[in-house]
Length: 359
Image 1 (cartoon, rainbow, N blue to C red):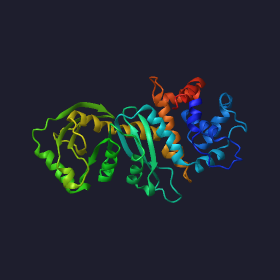
Image 2 (cartoon, rainbow, N blue to C red):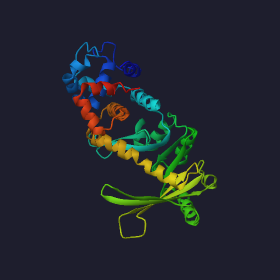
Image 3 (cartoon, rainbow, N blue to C red):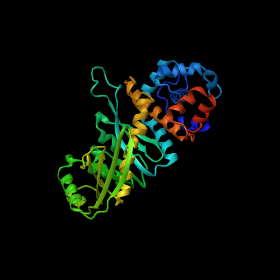
Image 4 (cartoon, one colour):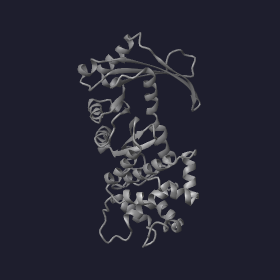
């Protein structure tokens, strides 16, 4: 537990000096409760009351278990950037080589009264290889690009390939990625106008580009197969003011159908020449952030149902959930995430060992 204490002590306490409950203990209880499936500040209090004997083995709890109002007030006041720095340190401890995904996610329950259509928007960074959340940032005024630029400036991405959807296919995002000594694979759509037209024409004219084909896969009740080609594009960067374009990739997808035409054709800007097989793998890896982070947050941690919406509470609770995911992912046992959470809820030894994975 010494490592856990050392890391969390770096988070400054925003309260007055006469606060009754120690901030470190509040954070540890919230994290332990989240590992066991708690979803709200009321759950944190009930977890503490139910596991007080266990918690007192390594916490003083001089004034007992904090109330749900105390948890709520602390997470509303806590500096989200300071707590998010703990998340970044955790991810850095495992390294982030390979494919890194950048994508936004709305916190559907975190909306002001009468503004359901505009909930809080977060930008997340996910390491597809290690399946760890690396960082998050609130999108200022729901501007994902601004949030992404803030995040990219903070991360050590050297040697990685950063993937993002078409919203982030922009020169400033590409330059920010290259400034961190990383490469990019960015989805390209028709909103890029002449650049999209030129990339599409370049792929269409390259009849001798060696393709790579992915065998048919069956998942989610459907059968799919994919084919990729990649074409060098050394002139596009200068012609369209887009940093370091090295190639244009195209991935065609077929779903189970009698038609011979692909059901979807996607184009990508690439800053390092990859093989067609590598392009297929990188594009497929981008969906890891949806399947292994966003889906888990919504289904196992009920993030969209969380109605904490005031001040910094939504951001800080989002960090706690991602720390819990990282800790559970770091446990090297052949169990699904849901089963690890159940073990943390039922087995004191498992819970204590899980907290010891904090780094």
